[in-house]
Image (cartoon, rainbow, N blue to C red):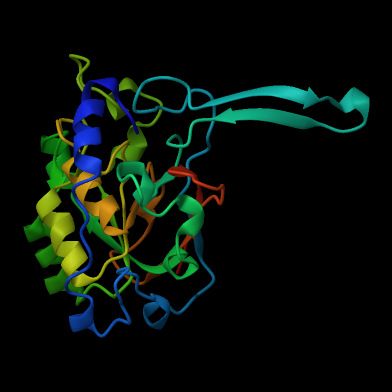
Length: 270
């Protein structure tokens, strides 16, 4: 995501805020200076059920800046013997990855994400009730603590996803803005993602346009989570069909050089 009114703030922030995991060692993870952990020991036992967490990406899928994230034209047509589209894609559109490089001058690009982090235990924090009352509701530390009380510790290397019910709004203006035209959608609070970093999570995901709530003026989560060597996933689908714990997420991140992110195919297996 990118928006002209906050670009100057982003530029000021991206060089100064770099955080590493502080609690991974306490969880017994093999984390070193890069803050990267392996999720392999905590993967779910597969039953064969697969849930698609990816929205179909087209020219009208909502984007942060309101401009189409995809354009396509025929490069070769069937009367020439086969068919081939020419695609023009904005990196941060559709169901997509935010790589560390998105909010830091020298962070890891999307092609540099460790493959161990693309296969991870999935933890889902449900704030649907809060979001129904407040469109800019956030996952807060007490929501993380409640999840831990109910489900046990967050596995090292986990992907922690917010379920707000917002995915059902795709295709309507309210997915992006309120009646007054202001951004309005749920996200994480920085206090919650700071706690997740301490707990050793490797990635976060949301079923909305942004890791930060719509009314954020400073992209606090982007500016703290991503420069710490972690990544995010925006515009997830299908989280309402999954339990709070027990699934493994497969994150099909793109692999283009120097990418700040990009559309991804994301699946969960139970």
